[in-house]
Image 1 (cartoon, rainbow, N blue to C red):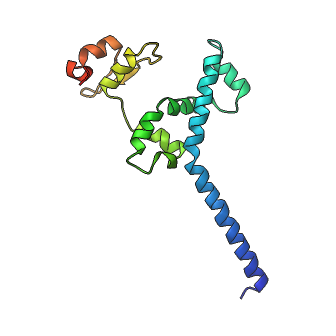
Image 2 (tube, rainbow, N blue to C red):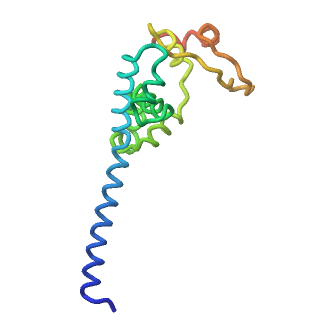
Image 3 (cartoon, helix red, strand yellow):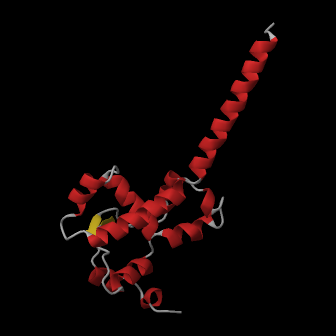
Length: 158
């Protein structure tokens, strides 16, 4: 059997282990909040950096990779979508960084959302090659093509 000293030491270790575990859980739950703040700061910095200088500025001044910076900015740009989607789930404040990214990836924009983005003044949204659902072929959906393929009811306000 263990001595009183060993039991006391084990109790101390258990207390520390539980404390560290609670800290890990707390940091995971606040990961999205930190990612959103980083995204806000990155967007602000990008707006101040001269055209064509963003990636070199990022590499020289930040310890974050280009891909991670893009993810932070994507989360920030889609914050309202995250808040809306998480309202039915565990709650926005309890999402991790990865859960936030997954929540965004799980949804595909509707045709009306794409048209809305394309019609915004000074929109930086650039349509990409997308899969056409029925035939599973790749097709470029530029704003003109997309607008002409959407029924008027989908694009007109209700």
